[in-house]
Length: 119
Image (tube, rainbow, N blue to C red; front, side, top):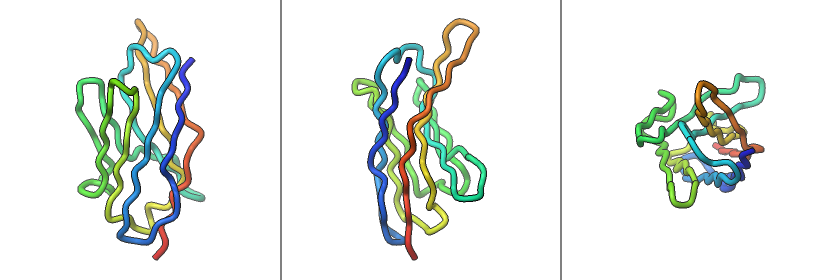
C-alpha cells in the first residue's frame, strides 16, 4: 500500500504562485512515475505534469513554461511549482504515483487539493 499526502493548495490571484507537495509513504519501491493531474468542474481528469524515475519530465501544453515538477527522492516527495497562475488553472489537483513490479503496474492517488485562481 502507498499513501500520498498532498499539501499546498489554496486561493491565489491570477499571476500568483503556489507550490504543491506530495509526500509518499508505505510500499514506495519500484516507483516509475510521479506526477500531478487536475480536474476542473465539469471537465475531465487531465495530466498536468509527470516526472519519471530517471528524471525525465513531461507537461501539459497549457502549463509549459509556467509549472515545474521536481522530485526529492530522499524525501519521497514530488513538488509542483506553479507560477503565473491563471483562472483556468482552477481545479482539484491530484498526486499520482505509479509503480512497476514485474509485469504489473500499480497506481496510487492522493486525496486531492483545491487550487483556486481568481481574476
